[in-house]
Length: 155
Length: 155
DNA sequence: AACAATTAAATTGCAAACAATAAAGTATGA
DNA sequence: TCATACTTTATTGTTTGCAATTTAATTGTT
Image (cartoon, rainbow over all chains, first blue to last red; front, side):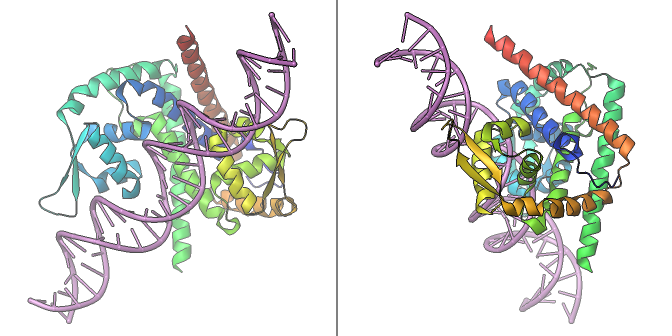
């Protein structure tokens, strides 16, 4: 992998991910317009439609986001009537995020609409899952390096 | 591709890109610490190390960023001594971005250090380029859809 | 019980990202 | 020439994203 000649911008894996991620964002932003949801709000809803309620911490682990990002995002989702935020009775530190009736009802409507948009992308299932696993591999590698650094720092 | 059962969060291509892109961001953020560059600042420098000077518009086309993002970012790069911003004489609307002497001198230093970090990722060249082209394909698909929507809107 | 250590969420501050708009220069056409 | 359209950059406002810190609650230890 090492090489003396620098890779051009377009040959950089990081830049491909950076660009593709932004384009996905635009794509979903457009697809989600009827529901007034941003993409980060949408994946938050996806996580909650899978499992609900979840604490802020659990959501954060699921989405790789910290409370600094989630707290204001969740306040917006609450204001728009998608979720409710309630301090846990058992442990007052925790805040439980649950779906509103509206969110439960809209689940399939949102899903159908978004999937209809995704279908336009015309990706076939085999290469989709293949690509997915390659991306997960890279992401795992990046995790490993991060923890390596942490170890290095610790000593 | 169409399916009645909703894909779970972890099976969504968009989420894989979203997550991987953030992890790359962390990775480079760490690697670039010695130079006090953020990742978006770094790719801006990469573009300029390839070709310089560039107008703000040309940089924006290269990086898929608009002036709302670039103007403040470039002001920060200027303040830190990496670039200079000068109104074009020929066309007063344009601002030429050029490298400082410091930036020219640091190019290889930055490159060597970052590449050394990337080597830790341990990606082999064959799958790297293969993955790269798959990602470009997906990104191109997303572009097409966006332009389709524009056409739909126009009528 | 009383203290410290840990944990969860919120807050603060900064850098992106982008839509929408404004401001200023340039090009075009009557 | 003059008015209009277009282009380029800058500005404003909103949402993310994250590091660092704060606040409050819980757990552990003596």
